[in-house]
Image (cartoon, rainbow over all chains, first blue to last red; front, side):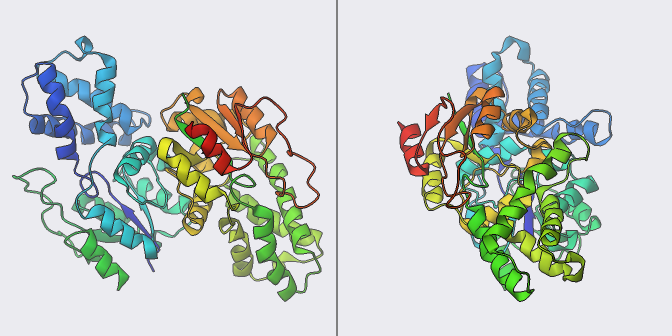
Length: 235
Length: 235
């Protein structure tokens, strides 16, 4: 029944928190900004949903995630007492592209490579196409296609983010499975007619993570990591 | 200077004429339609530009190539004296997806694999995303991203087909090279600010081909095949 497996990316396939902290650390030291790199990463990511909500609500036309990330970087710097207008633009642009250079979780590439044999695999992310393609090239993510948020022109959990993705692939929603580490994303995917797979990522938000530790609904598949997911879906 | 190499697909990367004839042959025999498979392929492909021109002219809203191919298949069948409404829809759908199953020219995969080391590589085709992704998966085309015509919402040689592709990749047009076996495509790409590479495909239209046998302008690179192209661009 399921022909394509679509993946949430930030948190599910890649570890954004460590990746952002790894690049923010040297930047913050160099510029004398007093901030813990992990707190900085959390604060930057904390502005992700509110920025997309401006688009989802219709208050703002669709803008790609690279643009939202860049605005959120400036706001985050101000939160930490730094003046972004006093920093060189190219240096901020480079830090902003840290989102293109996130590392996969240790099981991601091996699991995707197995799943690719029997299924069509692609990201279903709020990331833009260039971000996802640069990430895939660097990290060796073996996608069959890269569907940036530009393709659907919508941000999850808007229903169009799921239904337009299925349509672009010429598939029915029921032929598509979303795999995510986030129960909310899966709820929206199921409401749009998708099959659902939950893989917990209990370190996504660091050692104190309190959310999305377990499947909160009867998802179609629940697996401990991408290797276990492949094992289940190959059967 | 050039960071991304974008490729025309039908004729440049894959051999559409042999691929369509290979699948049309058994279909025509089975259905008792008196037509040479190569002539049938040429007739079907002959309706490609006029169908896209309806979209380019604004007389028709954007429709993906799978849809245009399906309409053109029915018209081509009528040209050969067959009534498409008397044939099973799923059989026509399957034949229509022959465009997803075209074989690459013998040098395509090896050349792309070499070029991928130093450049970001992607199709810049009038094909839709599902068509190009299914083709890539089957043929092993190692694209870094798959940009279907849905991404630009325009059909080559409209300028937006080139400029929006560069924009989605967050690149300037001058950082992009189009590689094509068609002088007209390269002229439009150059007008949009792209770098240009010509690779002749003298068998695209079969043994009697009279067009696009040589570079008609001073393109930035001219190479006999994709291996020679990689040799030139790696230097």
